[in-house]
Length: 59
Image (cartoon, rainbow, N blue to C red; front, side, top):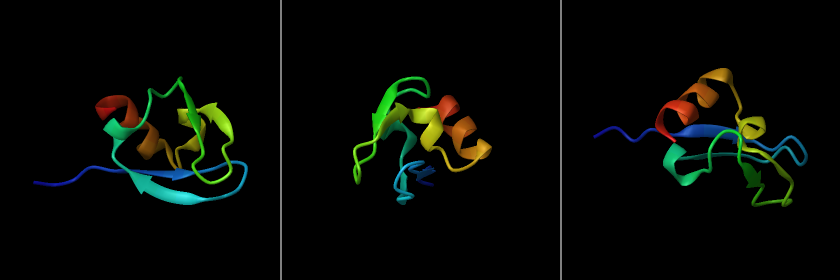
């Protein structure tokens, strides 16, 4: 079984990490950076368009 993940990058503190798309809220829902607690739509934390597509498809 292949584990699917998305790459995230905080636009405020530049923390980068990976997580499973089903561990995140929807693309338009508010997400909070675990490092600096910045609050923005989840889509703004996606590192690439591919990560955003994966989130929308599997999240």
